[in-house]
Image (cartoon, rainbow, N blue to C red):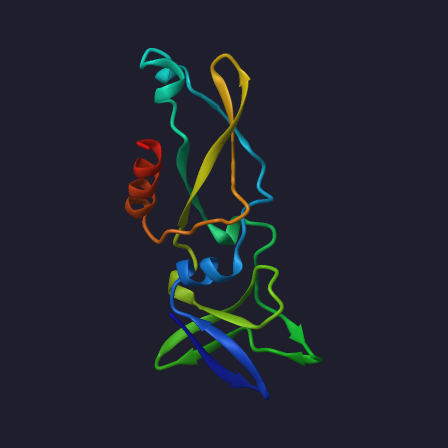
Length: 153
Protein backbone atom coordinates (compact mmCIF):
# COMPACT_ATOMS: atom_id res chain seq x y z
CA UNK A 1 0.00 0.00 0.00
CA UNK A 2 1.23 3.47 -0.85
CA UNK A 3 0.49 6.55 1.16
CA UNK A 4 1.60 10.11 0.67
CA UNK A 5 2.99 12.66 3.09
CA UNK A 6 4.48 16.09 2.62
CA UNK A 7 8.09 16.92 3.46
CA UNK A 8 9.33 20.49 2.93
CA UNK A 9 6.30 21.23 0.77
CA UNK A 10 6.89 18.24 -1.56
CA UNK A 11 4.62 15.19 -1.63
CA UNK A 12 6.55 11.95 -1.11
CA UNK A 13 5.51 8.32 -1.51
CA UNK A 14 5.55 5.97 1.49
CA UNK A 15 5.68 2.23 0.70
CA UNK A 16 4.89 -0.46 3.23
CA UNK A 17 6.38 -3.35 1.23
CA UNK A 18 9.16 -3.88 -1.27
CA UNK A 19 6.60 -5.55 -3.56
CA UNK A 20 4.42 -2.42 -3.62
CA UNK A 21 7.47 -0.29 -4.32
CA UNK A 22 8.84 -2.58 -7.06
CA UNK A 23 5.43 -2.95 -8.71
CA UNK A 24 5.21 0.80 -9.14
CA UNK A 25 8.83 1.70 -9.86
CA UNK A 26 10.92 -1.26 -11.02
CA UNK A 27 11.45 -2.70 -14.44
CA UNK A 28 13.77 -5.58 -15.05
CA UNK A 29 13.53 -5.54 -18.85
CA UNK A 30 17.10 -4.29 -19.08
CA UNK A 31 18.41 -7.32 -17.18
CA UNK A 32 20.48 -9.65 -19.33
CA UNK A 33 18.74 -12.74 -20.63
CA UNK A 34 19.63 -16.09 -19.13
CA UNK A 35 20.81 -19.10 -21.05
CA UNK A 36 19.02 -22.06 -19.50
CA UNK A 37 20.08 -25.67 -20.01
CA UNK A 38 16.81 -27.52 -20.67
CA UNK A 39 18.34 -30.97 -21.12
CA UNK A 40 16.37 -32.10 -18.06
CA UNK A 41 13.21 -31.72 -20.14
CA UNK A 42 14.57 -33.35 -23.31
CA UNK A 43 13.14 -36.77 -22.53
CA UNK A 44 9.71 -35.36 -21.72
CA UNK A 45 8.16 -34.92 -25.15
CA UNK A 46 10.70 -32.44 -26.46
CA UNK A 47 9.72 -28.86 -27.17
CA UNK A 48 6.16 -29.11 -25.85
CA UNK A 49 7.37 -29.79 -22.28
CA UNK A 50 9.91 -26.97 -22.13
CA UNK A 51 8.84 -24.34 -19.61
CA UNK A 52 7.68 -21.11 -21.22
CA UNK A 53 8.55 -19.22 -18.04
CA UNK A 54 10.69 -19.58 -14.93
CA UNK A 55 10.41 -17.74 -11.60
CA UNK A 56 13.30 -15.51 -10.57
CA UNK A 57 13.81 -13.83 -7.18
CA UNK A 58 15.18 -10.30 -7.21
CA UNK A 59 16.69 -8.34 -4.34
CA UNK A 60 16.34 -4.65 -5.19
CA UNK A 61 19.26 -3.59 -3.01
CA UNK A 62 21.62 -5.66 -5.20
CA UNK A 63 20.58 -3.77 -8.35
CA UNK A 64 22.98 -0.99 -9.37
CA UNK A 65 20.00 1.21 -10.32
CA UNK A 66 18.58 1.03 -6.81
CA UNK A 67 19.86 3.62 -4.36
CA UNK A 68 19.33 4.07 -0.66
CA UNK A 69 19.99 7.34 1.09
CA UNK A 70 20.82 10.88 0.08
CA UNK A 71 18.63 12.50 -2.58
CA UNK A 72 18.13 16.09 -3.63
CA UNK A 73 14.94 17.05 -5.44
CA UNK A 74 14.11 20.63 -6.48
CA UNK A 75 17.13 21.79 -4.45
CA UNK A 76 15.70 20.17 -1.32
CA UNK A 77 17.74 17.48 0.46
CA UNK A 78 15.53 14.84 2.02
CA UNK A 79 16.23 12.96 5.25
CA UNK A 80 17.71 9.50 4.69
CA UNK A 81 15.26 7.97 7.15
CA UNK A 82 11.95 9.04 8.64
CA UNK A 83 9.82 7.57 11.39
CA UNK A 84 6.06 7.17 11.11
CA UNK A 85 4.04 5.57 13.92
CA UNK A 86 7.21 4.06 15.38
CA UNK A 87 8.31 2.48 12.08
CA UNK A 88 11.45 3.49 10.21
CA UNK A 89 11.34 4.21 6.47
CA UNK A 90 14.43 4.61 4.28
CA UNK A 91 14.80 6.98 1.36
CA UNK A 92 15.05 4.89 -1.83
CA UNK A 93 15.15 5.39 -5.58
CA UNK A 94 15.02 3.05 -8.56
CA UNK A 95 15.19 5.71 -11.24
CA UNK A 96 11.81 7.28 -10.59
CA UNK A 97 11.33 11.04 -10.63
CA UNK A 98 9.75 11.24 -7.22
CA UNK A 99 10.80 10.89 -3.61
CA UNK A 100 10.02 7.49 -2.11
CA UNK A 101 10.45 5.95 1.30
CA UNK A 102 10.31 2.19 1.88
CA UNK A 103 9.75 0.49 5.23
CA UNK A 104 13.29 -0.31 6.39
CA UNK A 105 12.35 -3.75 7.72
CA UNK A 106 11.15 -4.75 4.25
CA UNK A 107 14.26 -3.63 2.37
CA UNK A 108 16.02 -7.00 2.21
CA UNK A 109 13.00 -9.08 1.15
CA UNK A 110 13.01 -10.40 -2.41
CA UNK A 111 10.35 -9.83 -5.01
CA UNK A 112 9.65 -12.42 -7.67
CA UNK A 113 9.16 -12.11 -11.39
CA UNK A 114 9.02 -14.32 -14.46
CA UNK A 115 11.45 -14.79 -17.31
CA UNK A 116 10.13 -15.97 -20.68
CA UNK A 117 11.57 -18.35 -23.25
CA UNK A 118 12.55 -16.41 -26.38
CA UNK A 119 15.05 -18.27 -28.55
CA UNK A 120 16.92 -21.51 -28.91
CA UNK A 121 20.68 -21.03 -28.52
CA UNK A 122 21.82 -24.63 -28.98
CA UNK A 123 20.12 -28.00 -28.97
CA UNK A 124 19.57 -27.98 -25.21
CA UNK A 125 19.99 -24.31 -24.29
CA UNK A 126 17.32 -21.62 -24.63
CA UNK A 127 17.45 -17.90 -23.95
CA UNK A 128 14.97 -16.63 -21.37
CA UNK A 129 14.41 -12.88 -21.01
CA UNK A 130 12.71 -10.46 -18.67
CA UNK A 131 9.65 -8.89 -20.35
CA UNK A 132 9.08 -5.17 -20.91
CA UNK A 133 5.94 -5.25 -18.77
CA UNK A 134 7.44 -6.83 -15.68
CA UNK A 135 4.96 -8.51 -13.37
CA UNK A 136 6.05 -8.44 -9.72
CA UNK A 137 4.97 -10.97 -7.09
CA UNK A 138 5.34 -10.71 -3.33
CA UNK A 139 5.79 -14.45 -2.79
CA UNK A 140 7.52 -17.21 -4.67
CA UNK A 141 4.34 -19.26 -4.41
CA UNK A 142 2.28 -16.61 -6.20
CA UNK A 143 4.89 -16.31 -8.95
CA UNK A 144 5.10 -20.09 -9.30
CA UNK A 145 1.30 -20.36 -9.56
CA UNK A 146 1.37 -17.88 -12.46
CA UNK A 147 4.29 -19.72 -14.06
CA UNK A 148 2.48 -23.06 -13.74
CA UNK A 149 -0.61 -21.57 -15.37
CA UNK A 150 1.42 -20.16 -18.27
CA UNK A 151 3.46 -23.34 -18.67
CA UNK A 152 0.31 -25.46 -18.89
CA UNK A 153 -1.37 -23.46 -21.65
